[in-house]
Image (cartoon, rainbow, N blue to C red; front, side, top):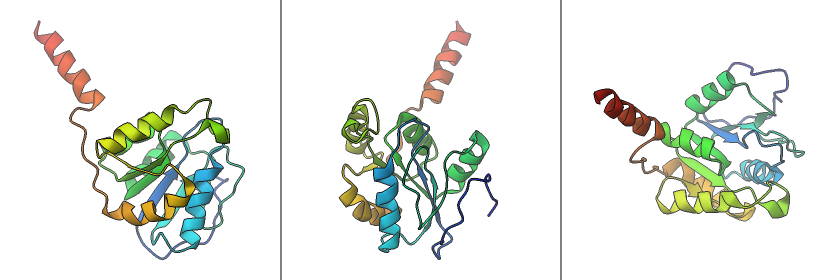
Length: 177
């Protein structure tokens, strides 16, 4: 596997060939709660796959998975594309990308009470996409192990229309005028 930047920490790897990408996005807020929960779940054996994490501004540094604070776009896209599943915050960019590529996605919303964001808008986002069968959601760190065990079997329901397809249809309509 190629090295992605000097800041990647080479830690103990799991034995599987499958890879899961954990991403906390590019928010300037830490998301230690998610990174720690996944790291502990790996240590407890809830995950058989290798996990690579983009941890952003987290203070917690994982010991059971490789990680980098940030990745450039090309590195991120490569990790995303090569992963069998994704774990992330409930941000629209991560959700849209996973849906576009039909990747199983486990989301945990960032919460204001833990200084993970300025408000709790990700709660509504997670609930909406979970209700429609697009994502698995974990609303507390304690459920991360059971959600991780379910993630390999989760088949996300595809979106009916991606923004790109809607834009293409609108452009096609306008060109016909």
